[in-house]
Amino acid sequence: MVIKEKISKIKKWHSVFSSFIFFILLGFCSWTVNLKISNISLSEFGIQEETSIVWNGFLLIISILLYLESIKNLINHLRDAPFYLYVLFTVSSMCLLLTALIDMRYIMFHNTVAVLYFIGYSSSIFLFGKNLLSSNFRMGISSITISLLSIFIPMYLVYSFPGLAI
Image (cartoon, rainbow, N blue to C red; front, side, top):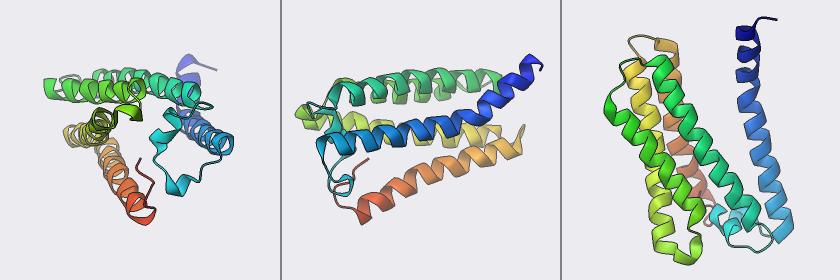
């Protein structure tokens, strides 16, 4: 098997594996601290003694991987990517990193960086897709769709379940 084919195969399974790990982690944290996910904020796992190290550790890893993946995508798909996209992806990844490092005991700062991550990363994906429309229409539309879903689905969940502030 050629290296490109192996990389392509890994990329196909990356999203499935990442989602699987997230749901396993979510289930583990919910079961360990016996909290009902529909009544709490996900950040609550970061201050529970039983789950704080695992939850915050995974957030740290995810923030670093999101940053590396976004910069790699900018370099590979938008050779002349606008500077503001690098800044947006970097700042939003740093906000997720700060969300992991500063737990909910400092609620105002924690919530501020969490909201900045939420808005910044979704906006970054949207603008990435918008800039990609002319050269790769399918990937551009996919990025725009994912960014819109990453805004509207959490908003719906927060509205439907009072404590589920993602």
